[in-house]
Amino acid sequence: MQSQAITEFGKPLQLIETPTPTPAGTEILLKVHNAGVCHSDVHIHDGYFDLGGGNKLPMANMKLPHTLGHEIEGEVVAIGPDVKGVSVGQRYAAFPWIGCGKCPACERGEENICVGGPRQLGCSSGVAGGYATHVMVPHAKYLIDYGKTNPALGAAYMCSGLTAFSAMKKIGKLGANDVPAAPLNTLDEVFNDPQVREYGFPVEAEHPVMGKMRLVGSGVELDRTPPAVTLPPPMLGEHTDEILENLGYEKAMIEKLREQGVI
Image (cartoon, rainbow, N blue to C red):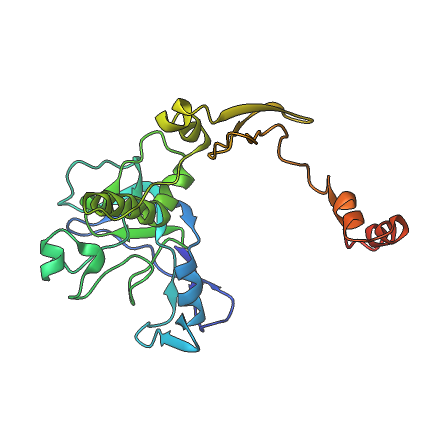
């Protein structure tokens, strides 16, 4: 198998070849189809986590060479003799936050905060990740069926998606304890919000490129000077000349700035 591995912190990844492992026991070998790049990968590659204020957390225990990649999706190509419910040819995302299975956190089902010796794919020393042709997963319970989701997105969900999911779970707890919190809505969710519809916030405006657009109107009601949203968002640079003229720039100077690529 081939891997793009860290052989020296801060230096370009190197292509290395090693024997393709054979799964034993409950192990499952995936042929990697998709592997995401996370900011944590950047930190590990640097050899430290930047804590801010000039403080660094060095990766002193990370043995090199090391294969990064914890956002993984791939195809089952081999299984150990004790594997059940998984067949060669199936596609899965790999849950990377694997713990020791013995510490109190792992026994609570919170392997992501294992304190007894985590085995996180691509993040723990000695545990190879997905920047390779193959990756070994220790048990079928760490294989996630991503359904009809785009496979590349399924891989990314193993980190960025779980981060967002965790935040959403916390929001529910905050609200239950009278801590103001709310989710970030999509545009459709904004316009279908009962309060937005009740107060007549959705308005329409004609956009020169996109045609009619739905906009959220003003949330403030004034008796004598009622606000009104009548214009769509401006095109890039649409009001540049007008703004500069109001600031005292003459047309010749504005043209010169445009010729120089400043605006």
